[in-house]
Length: 74
Image (cartoon, rainbow, N blue to C red; front, side, top):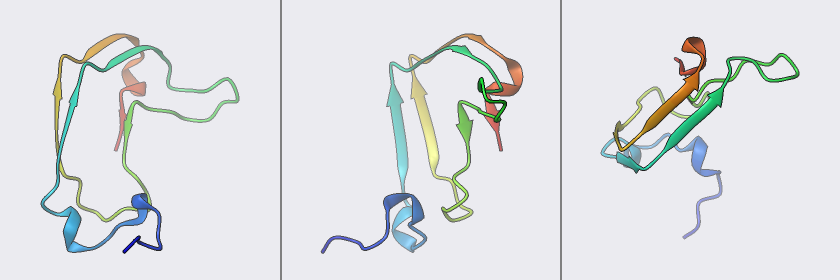
């Protein structure tokens, strides 16, 4: 059965055993502010998700010319 809520709003026990594996990802020329002045970050929490964030494993990730405060906002 298709869930009635979007994936980013899942808050049940099914997500607690999750594991995320990401390969060959590049972050390049990433600034902490958009041209409109809004904050942005390569990694941030989803405000609609549960408080639990599953373990993420990154392989072959390249980070070049990314501002320090644009890397993560937690």
